[in-house]
Image (tube, rainbow, N blue to C red; front, side, top):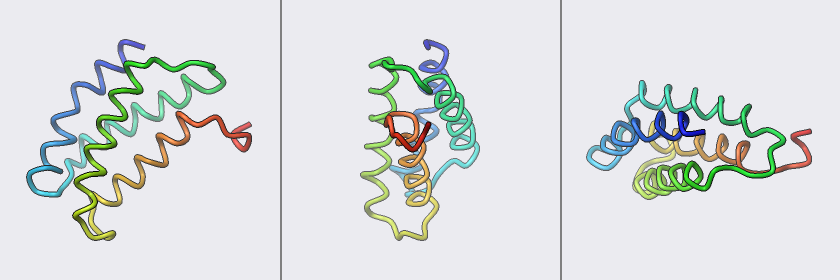
Length: 100
């Protein structure tokens, strides 16, 4: 699990700085982030527990991006990226009967 944390942590600045400074996204950073999240989804499927450290980092990234996206149009890349991130996190963190 540490490898996922490190991989995500290395992307934090690339994900957050453009959002905070310009209300834009670094598309390459988001593509890497989404690939890691897809791996996490496979890794955590059917697991009872998820690392608090990873969940905390994901929450920090999501909440930071969400705060910035509130100041964007729903057509902006940042807003769309946050919606996609929310969907991915929901699939990873929520144990839904429809996932079976």
